[in-house]
Image (tube, helix red, strand yellow):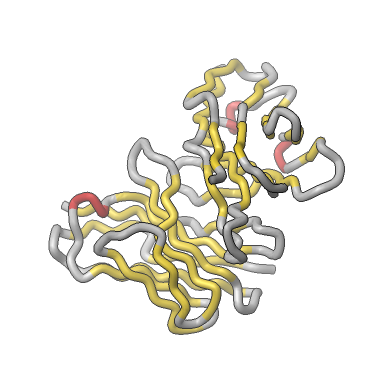
Length: 111
Length: 115
């Protein structure tokens, strides 16, 4: 069966520091992968999606970037965090009929 | 453009009462529809999905939803809720702009089940 992992689970970082969040999927090949953010009191915001290795599409302009160095690995990065980057970050992989399966999430607090 | 509207941001209900969480969508083409549940500090879990066929879809945890094409709705129902159903529920529709499998999510409905 398929499993999706995210780490770290929680992170507290100062403004201006770098960020790296990792997501890995097991049990499936060449999945579509997604990064979402949930800010307090707001819904889900799609940040990036990827249909294959090295293929990244950005949905919103921001100081975040994403990379997909391996088939089942998706990384979210930032060179300098802003206060507004605080939130709950979710990674997901896509099934064959548009359904998406989510990881446990990373709670990021920028101080 | 496609969109999803969840009409209620919060729904309080007593334990063992029935509940309906409303979802309407707009789209000029056929869509796939989904309901997800999110417990505090966890990821989203797929409750059920409508792809085609029977308009009444049954999901996990005793939930069901009915697809109504004429009213462009996909309301989620449960005949008798439990305290453990307290969570946030998201309705989603397939984004058919491309082949990336993207979903468009509603803003969520917080279900609060009281004893």
